[in-house]
Length: 59
Image (cartoon, rainbow, N blue to C red):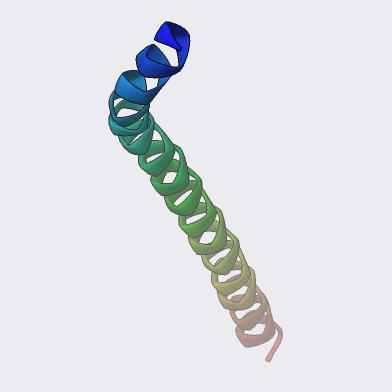
């Protein structure tokens, strides 16, 4: 019974400690995913510009 009381009292503390950790992990993954997507689109745009420059030079 005492062990159950300890778990019952510790449950809000554990959830309060885990909430920032979980939200930090989710935000980090989201930011990394957005940066990866942004870098991929920048690479695609720069390749397109390079191809246009080569096309302009050959004319």
